[in-house]
Amino acid sequence: MRNYKIGIIKGDGIGPEIVEEAIKVLDAVASKEGFNLEYNEYLLGGAAVDVFDNPCPDETIKGSLNSDAVLFGAIGGPKWESLPKEKRPESGLLKLRKSLGLFANIRPAIIFDELVNASSLKPEVIKGVDLTVVRELTGGIYFGEPRYKDDNKAYNTMIYTRDEIARIAKIAFEEAMKRKKKVTSVDKANVLEVSELWREVVEEVAKNYPEVELEHMYVDNAAMQLVRDPKQFDVILTGNIFGDILSDEASMIVGSIGLLPSASIGGKVGLFEPIHGSAPDIAGQGIANPIATILSAAMMLDFLNETSAAERIRNAIKEVLKEGYRTKDIAAFDAKEVVTTSEMGSLIADHAAN
Ligand SMILES: NC(=O)c1ccc[n+]([C@@H]2O[C@H](COP(=O)([O-])OP(=O)(O)OC[C@H]3O[C@@H](n4cnc5c(N)ncnc54)[C@H](O)[C@@H]3O)[C@@H](O)[C@H]2O)c1
Ligand SMILES: CC(C)[C@H](C(=O)O)[C@@H](O)C(=O)O
Ligand SMILES: [Mg+2]
Image (cartoon, rainbow, N blue to C red; front, side):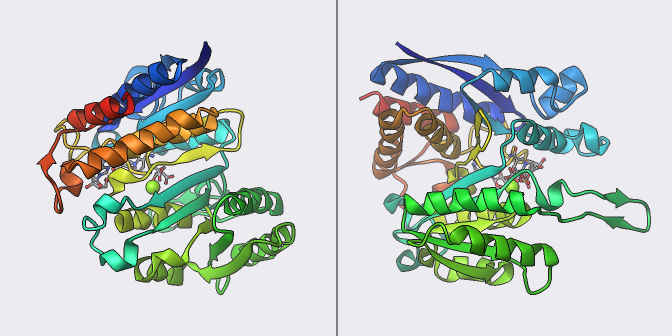
């Protein structure tokens, strides 16, 4: 039997609740499709600070590298906010991404027909939206040196090298080749030198993909165009911080941040995580939407070449939504019944097993 070692990182806040539901669904499809998943749990973020006084213990890095793939919930929360920066949960996540070499973060935003009324945008604007943000994940202003803060002055540095830009651009063009063959590269080249280089290198990489249409867009315009006419986009290629912001924005086109999954790739092992955070405001209430994490688990199965199991999960989600089940965040329209996090997970698992 095919056997996969899956690292599980639940994290903080709603992390444990949503990862539990994804595991339920993974177990349902694994037995149906005839493969076995072996789970090993690791600590990251606040949960790791509480035990090891370290937001990204070596054991988590080693365990992740020994896995075939890692499924991750979310980290962070007010409990750890005032710790020194190196002890904060967010630093732990950045260290894990960097240590695993995960320079590419793929964040698809695909609307479910059943949820066109859940978005605050008009149905005709969003019906059929299928775009993906390819976000650079281990460079840019998040990691640039020098960085500094005192009482009067603080700064960070946005750096990209030619190689860093070329490798993320290649991922975006390869993605576009599998899709509608359009790349929109988003930058701030009217102001920033780092964006000028970004543009030059993206142009060079584009020469290897003559079938793909390339356009450049300033990030402020892109933020506006996303809500004006999201269907104009296929692949959005952008840097670390712009990708972080635009993908949260894209989630509201689809209806809720609780719906957007992601795959962080580029190293030996992929890390699969929802784009949202640990949502401390709703943690422990059983109202978090587990679909982003369940879709991340489906992306993980695609990565493991278990594509039919991944498709089974996506179909199960569509059926459950079609039947009118909604978590609170997407309950405003067309809900037959509002369900808890755990009920949503069980419904999807049941459908996926049939
Ligand atoms: N990848 C990650 O682990 C990650 C990502 C983003 C933020 N964070 C961290 O999470 C903490 C909270 O950050 P934030 O509040 O700015 O962002 P957040 O994404 O956690 O929450 C923003 C809003 O969206 C809601 N929300 C998020 N996920 C949801 C879900 N699955 N279902 C329903 N509603 C959901 C929350 O209730 C909140 O109102 C911070 O410590 C932040 O650093 C972690
Ligand atoms: C928590 C934070 C470091 C992280 C990021 O900015 O990458 C988060 O917002 C995300 O989108 O995964
Ligand atoms: Mg973010």
